[in-house]
Image (cartoon, rainbow, N blue to C red; front, side):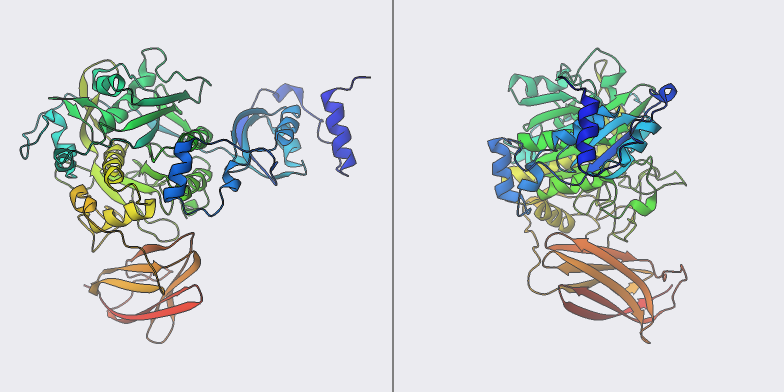
Length: 551
């Protein structure tokens, strides 16, 4: 006797003592009125694991701080996925890192899925729609100094962060594998002729259509991705030279470009897991995801996409993401996930005069950390047009690959540096190293200084450094935490009354920089005077006095 799949499911759940009467009470009329949701599971099938490449194993052993890789490599239980499908959910992506799947489902299916005994949560897949960048004819600027290469109009964006000097020293990103996520890529453009001829395009995958073609037809789908990749990887002397023109690349098509760019976070997560298994050293991403979130979720651990980015970093990948173009958006203004991640390198945009662009997204995060981390040219970047030739583009989308490319040069010379090490040397080597803020972060990096810098690795006891001294109108508190810990930070007046209180969770030795604007948690400005800050972590309490001046 043969039984239907639905009958087998009902029998299995009934044996588990689960009431199934409401699971299949569907409303046929709304079957195709679906929305995309994450479905999180309670456990995994520990007998099946993902096989990662030798290159990924090497990177993990060299740079990862995660003590146990099994939690990342164990596959999602296929029986759970099958049960969700049997209820009517159409699976889009499967995430072993999150132990979750993304599905398209109508309201009746979602209600049934929520009641499955192994489902811990159901939440919408976040998305984001942003206008296409507008290309403009490029007004050539003079070269600021002699160089080995003729950078042509791309000179300004490269020299601003001193990458041309590292090129002069022979660095190009050789041996570093960079993963780039975007809308699609015209890899036949002349800017990528060297990339192709040297066989450094290692892998491609289209997560939207489920194939390996990231070019598709020659239409606008290639627009954004082609420009972004060229800023990072292009090499066409006299026109465009990207920072990491000698690196290897894995390209993922994760966004849909039509009248606007539509991005959904489940494709990002799927692409990140694929790239990690290949062994990428850096992920460069120029999008973010804010639909279904609000700015209170920007705490580095709430947004699904941020959690996935944190996991990638824990496996030794440097994750670089555009800060976002929300600076003029009064309903948001902040950085966009995953840029809020603790170790995600969020990149804002400046103009050719090194001034912050009005649309560049700002900080702080919801828990008070400084964002963005760094800035690079985000107005008038020179890049490749998908229709051929070159043009000028603006947006933090084009600042991020400049920093990602510079990091490839750092790792080429210092392959042992962890993501935390990279951030540490860049903070010390940037234009606002001693007084970062929530517009520029630590400022514009000087990659030469970073290359010859030494990473700061906290050890011993927790500590606090306050800059400047005395603090004038605002103060930066650099909280040194030598190990994974729950961190509590507060500022008090001399009577002991708390003015602000913050809590952070760190997974490794790190330095958290918190910028205080001289207001208490009620938004009231404090007067000039002596104040006390308190840092508690790992069972240790540190107190420091400082003088605050209100001008």
